[in-house]
Amino acid sequence: MESPSSASHELILPLRFQVLEDFFFTVLMATVDVDQKYLGRFAKNTGSDNPYLSSMLFKVLGLSVILTKKLVRARKLRRLDTTRDTKSLQLYHHIIWLSREGLVLVEQYILPMVVDYIELKVLAYKLRASFYHNYVLYHNQPNINRTAIPSYAAPSNRAKAQDRSSLTSSPVFDSPMLGGPIRNTSSLPPGLAPISIPKPSASFLLPAVDYIPTASSCFTMADALADELLPGSHPIRLSIKLEYAAYLYDCLHDAEGSRNLARQSIRDVYEAQEPINDDMFEDAAFLVGYLGKMMRRGLSVSSGSTPRNGSVATPSTPRARDIPYSDNGVPPAIPNPRTRTHV
Image (cartoon, rainbow, N blue to C red):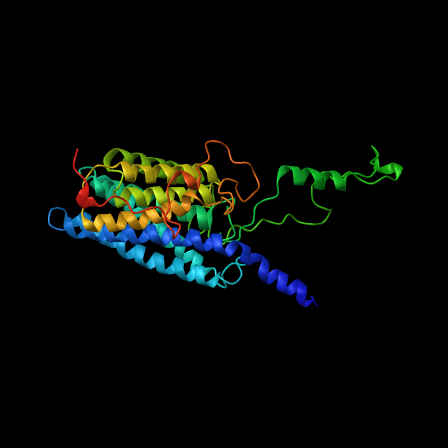
């Protein structure tokens, strides 16, 4: 029986990661809210000139709403102990299935029809990157975090070599007539049949492979389109920047690249000269607040320049003092759209 101190330590230790995971989940939900808002608007506006595209957009919107509820439920089930997976794998299977179906709708039906649109085109490429982001989070092989479905990887060649050497380490004579052991050419003990390694539990839905290269390529393409077609203060562009920064930090473990991206995105907002309406201004200000927190993510609170892992920050690492902050710890409000002049 475990002592009370060890049991409490097992309960407290996972809580060290709860703040980081809660922040990452909040960032994803912030981008989803903005994406769903504009997705519904585009689905309604395209109903007259392209009903088929409008129907596909409404399908993706409905799927996104259901997927968001599943993600929220999965996060709540993991709130107390982040080292354990949810009680039922069906929830993760549903998340993967919804992401797969949404990706099919975007790639096969929506992307070919949004060539003549600007904002919708950028949003479609962003949705594709988001679905691949879910693949990396919940079904990547190898797993990048504890939220992935448990999988079973085949033993490496080095492990096989060690097992083989341990079985044949005893002296072996050329002839069994001399009384020595017979050489075992198999990696398994004599009489033990080979055991097949079980596949990941969700492999019937999606191949368990490394989706990081594909997801990274999709984020890069969506980011390039946003920079080319949308102004710096556009909410869709900021949504791409925010999720891309979260992807760099949590999936690629590129903290410096994530902070650099968030920092440059905020600068683009301040330097943008294109006029925006009040609705877009509110969405942009909402996302800029999260970009400011993302820019300081992983930096110590005291110095603001040393990462939490103890490594020394390089001169290219963004620092919180480079951008002025208000008393509540977020960047100042972006310039009012009514005061901007079109250049």
